[in-house]
Length: 205
Image (tube, rainbow, N blue to C red):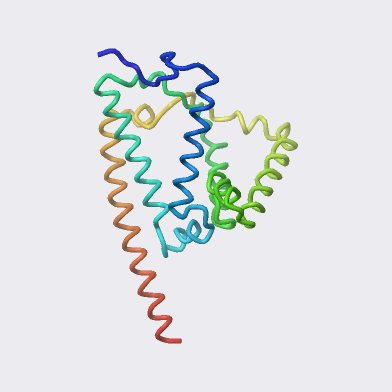
């Protein structure tokens, strides 16, 4: 069977059409996020307090579903994994960046994507968050000459989890599915625990 995915890499459409496709997908993604309530900072921040783990469940489901789709499309011979683009891994800089992003997520209640959804629907807190993000980009640009060496450090090249762990893609997929099941179970337990705690506090008051 001849591989024909990713469509762009096999020449099914040109650069201009790819931008239109990306725009349509982006609009659809933002619409789905808003309809799911992900444009609300309260709902997004609730996952850190175990009062509403909807965001965690949806995102982990999306990751797992995407991994399953990629695995089976590759296994059936439709998808050429070598043509899927992903950037190099810079372990320490990206770990620090993820930590900073996580702290900002807890404080502001948004990530960059969901803040865009909030801005599109006119939420003032999301607008402030977006302005803060732009200011952070400016500060990063000004500081870059002093942090460039760290920024380019611990380059591991283009590596994915199966390669990093030295395991077959199917085994890694199975592990992720188990992690998802454990995560969903833990999320449900946390929600119930916090609901009981809140109920007891209401009774005491």
